[in-house]
Structure formats: structure tokens, C-alpha cells
Image (cartoon, rainbow, N blue to C red):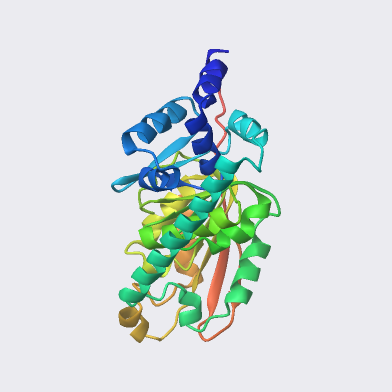
Length: 312
């Protein structure tokens, strides 16, 4: 009962209710919330701390910033927010300010890509069959997924497509610009059960066996150590969970190693199977999506934990 009372006390304040309403629609950092609500950073930081301590918000550090969002299991927060009137003038003004800020954030991220000459839509840049690749990946995954992790989520396109199947989704990426675009995409579509964060795919700050499915789409050919990346993906996958990998088949396009900073000229089935086996996953099926470059889809399952047998 003490925990419930603490949550009710934390929510029972006008500014904190506004913060909850905003953070239920997407992830925001303190500077964003200062701009939206027009209040001082120390004041909002205190309110946010109280909401996090009560378990109504989750705080995710990312570089010099921290992002705040209503967690998927915060049932009380969602019950409270469901009772707030949608036409409340103050909450409506907050939503308009948040939409403007999200648009500015996405535009700034896109401009950063253009300034640095990066083409983040790699499948289009390489002339790949993006629709065919996506269809093959979606067909390989279960129709209902509890928790999904998308490693190298980019701008969140796969998370958006899979959102109707998920109880909870998490995307991780090393690029802050990519994550800015992903957050805007997810917030615009009201996908509050899906979030993203910055992370190193070799050292995921996530518990073992935490996800029912893990995806890596067009990630491994950038990896310095693909075996280590797959080992980490398998570590966070629950026994019996599904791992889906999409990447380039072996090719002779040596110019991609320089022009697109690829580390590997595609992967054959033997290499993928060896790395998966060493990480505790069993390959179950594979497929090819033909195109300017052939793309391979590999699906594997995490081996069940061995059952200990007691002898007397």
C-alpha cells in the first residue's frame, strides 16, 4: 500500500500531471520539457525525480542528457492519464508545443545527416528491395511478441511496423541523430509502448533473457566483431526466443567497403551458423531476397537452458 500511496502523491500535482501526459506520448529530455512547459530546469528536474522515484517515469541516460518516458508497466500512470480530459486547454497547448519541438528536432537531425553527407536509408542507397526485405522479416517473426529488441534500430521504421504485434518494444542505436528521428516517428504515431535509447551493441546494459525476439537489420556488415554482436544479442534473448538477422550475402562489390564504410563484404551461412552456435542459438531457417545485392535472412532460436538432474 505504501508504494501505491507514494505514486498517488507523486502524481497529485499539476506540473507533474502535465509531465506524465507528455512522457506517455514519447521520450523527452529535461531541456525539451523546459521549452514545452516554460518552467525552470531545477523545478522540472525536481518534479521528474519524484516521478522516477515513484516508478511513474523511467529515466534513461544518454550522453550528457537523460530521457524520460512512462514505462510499459506503469499501469497506475496510464489509469490516471486516461481520466484527464483531452480538451483541457493547458494539456492541449502542451501537445501543440511538443509537436512543434519534435518537428524541429527531426529537422535538425535530418540537416545534420545532409551536412555530413550521410545517407541513412542504406537499402535505398544500395538499390536493395526494401519492400521485399521488410516483408520477409515480418513474415519470419511471430504474430504476437511480448518484448522485442531491435539492435541498430536507425530511424525506427521496423519498430513502427512491428508495433501492433508487440507488448513492448525497445530499439537501440549508436547514433543520436538516428534516435532523434526515431523518437519523433514513434511519438507522432502515439506508440507509447515502444522506445529507443543509445547503446553499444557489444555491451547492452540489459539483463539476460529479457526479450522474446531480437532483430538485427543491416547491422552486422558495419560491425568490427560480428561474433561478439551476435553473442550479445543471444544473451538478452530468452530461451526459446527468436533471433532474426537481415544482412548482405557475400558479394564482390569492394567499393562498398570504402564508399559506405562497410567492414564486411556480406556473410555466408556457415559463418552465421558458427557464430550463432557459439552464442547458444540454433539456426532454424534462412531465405534470400534477390536484388542489386542479394540479402539473406537468418532466423534462429535460443537453446533452452539445460535441466539439472539430481542423483542420489
